[in-house]
Length: 71
Image (cartoon, rainbow, N blue to C red; front, side, top):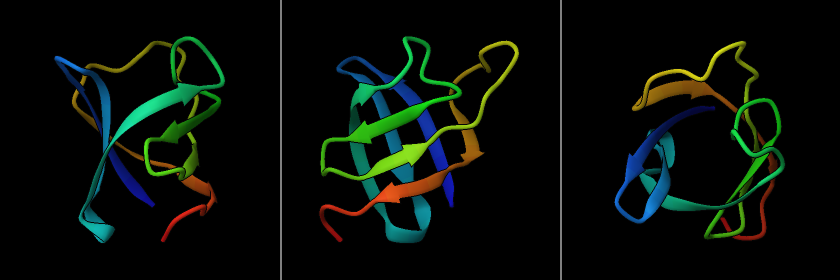
């Protein structure tokens, strides 16, 4: 699923265009976000792609949704 990641004054935010969903990233598996999972404030968890070097933000990536606490 396409997910846009951007930096905001409050922290990292994810936007899922297909669902018109905009949520803050509240927890990550790895310190740099990339290559692990990222949990959104609504409970959704995405497997984020790994990058050798962190990309410039904002960036749109293909992320796999791992859970669906809320739909």
